[in-house]
Length: 580
Ligand code: ADP
Image (tube, rainbow, N blue to C red; front, side, top):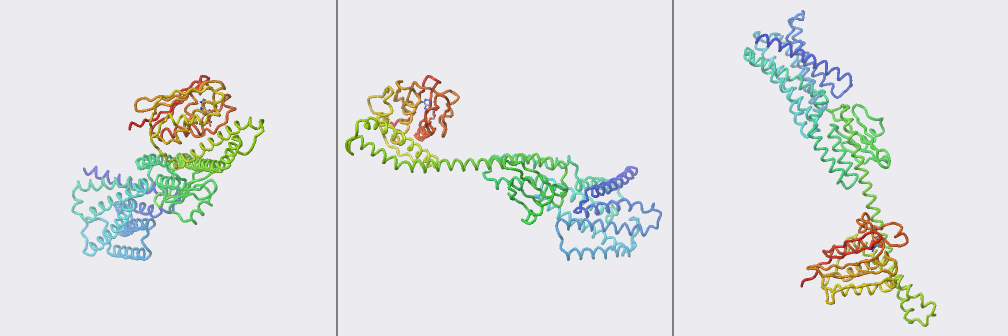
């Protein structure tokens, strides 16, 4: 047991020695001012562990060594308090009081001439002085433990874990110091000594992890947050509606992920898209500065309109961005760029769509008035109401009237389409005989049908359905005029109504150019026209079938097609019947 304890004492000294060397080396390498006090606290603590028990072997008079150890011991606590002050300021007067207080306690400790061997009997003054020194150190250490422990809540994963490791490490040290100095009776018990030695040994990796955690540990700490980040990023990129919101959330997550405290995103036009935890002046200062350094991470964003960037500035306790963070942030930068571009594209498309439907709306309304006048006068001229018409002029009048009807029905389609888009299409349903409505629609198209053989096949009795009569006729007119448009002169166009249980099927069949199976899904989309040799000379808007299917569906019915290239098409309108 004694040998084991001796070995443990050596191990503790070696461990603290290594801790001092490693933290010092790390600090010199990165010249990181913010952690200076923490390095000093750890190095001084290591010196206490190294010098204290070896005072006898130093070959100099014992008392000065003991006094120096006492000062170093107090300073190790004082520097930890100053480190806490650099993270969470104590206030100027508090700092002065503490400094003066510690100096007085140190002076009292030296004046008491404390013995280096704790087992030697102490005078009452020495007991008071020793208690005051230990109590001061404990206060200096306990206060930061509590403050930093509390500050760790809600911090980025790595930063929070580092603060917790630091608090835990120092809490272990307090326990060791308390047992070792105050409860000296306990130090006679080998079991207790063993336990405190083990705790002292375990404290070392904790303190080192808090100071400079290795990559694997950082990754382990940040893993849960990273998983959450991935899920959040997915939602963020796919569903965030505007760029500002997306940039804000992306920046928020990115700073959390690498343990940064603040940052900003610059758009391709140089404007600041979003900033976090920084004033406008600070953002301007940072964006004017050169690329990344050890406390600032700048990641380029290759946006569709040019280069943007994301800058993350380190938090006070995570001043260093390792390779790992840089790599991870670059990885996510690609996704953030895609997300920002996606939103711009969606915005542009939406603006384009809006412009298109505004144009539809304005153009159709503006054209309707003049067309009504033209059609009216043409009809009056044809009827002879405006006097005799020369025979040659008379022959072209039916064609002019048919063409003005065509324009009118196009305008009607455009108006209805823009109503549908704006959600302004309200059906005016009434119980109607759909055979009668179909007849009326066909009648309207008569001039168009002169070159085709029209066959109508309908039941002799009424077929009642609850429909909007005007909209129902729009669908029929569209299907019949398409059948005429897309089939050769002289071919047959057949219109059929067949009641079938609770539904009726209105079908329009032609013997025309037909539609390839691959093209069929596109027929019913807005502006969906099929461009090929056969349709090259037929004009149209591509709105008719889209509008017709929407109208059918608003009636709880549907519009479908069966077709084969070169063999004609059948469009089927399914409408629920009125059973009342
Ligand atoms: P439009 O006829 O004004 O172009 P539609 O929405 O009515 O618009 O039709 C969309 C496309 O479907 C047409 O451009 C045409 O290519 C095709 N189409 C429609 N009806 C037929 C048909 N009966 N036969 C062959 N192709 C058709």
